[in-house]
Length: 185
Image 1 (tube, one colour):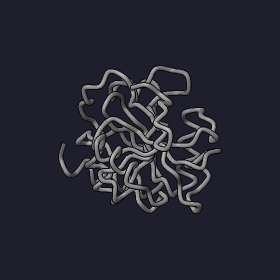
Image 2 (cartoon, rainbow, N blue to C red; image 1 turned 90 degrees about the vertical axis):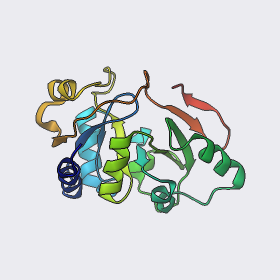
Image 3 (cartoon, one colour; image 1 turned 180 degrees about the horizontal axis):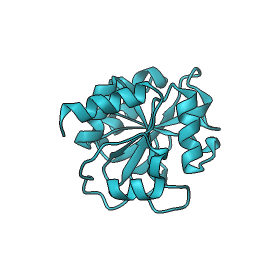
Image 4 (cartoon, rainbow, N blue to C red; image 1 turned 30 degrees about the horizontal axis):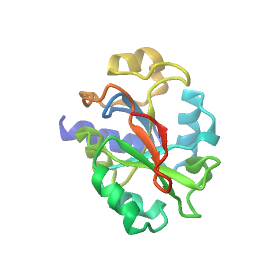
């Protein structure tokens, strides 16, 4: 993937646009997490209720720290053992984290991605990016750029073409405090 495509995707995100990109298992849709209009537009595209909250992906744990309350050593050990990788953790959010990211929760779903292109997108953007599967709610997630284009058409501002990771299913989601699996991977 050339730097041009990543720089263009960064500009789309900075302007409040929606970018589709490959992840560990499916194509994701992303936007600037601190742009409420972009997040609301993404939710409208997917027909997803805001109450569910969003996932943020990042290229490093440091990119996520402004969104999260300090974590203890036991939780840090879990994160270190699973990141970068295909585990999304629910961690306590800072009080100032916007409702459009948390939904009706006091936690925030976050992942340090192991997918090289998704991580490069976060690096290029300079922080975490919203990550939700590229599909309408209740439909199968897109597994190719062509499927994104067919299903979502011009609702997506830019598609970052690339190869998916080797996961057959979307990433696992776990509650960091209880260890409970919210979504099996």
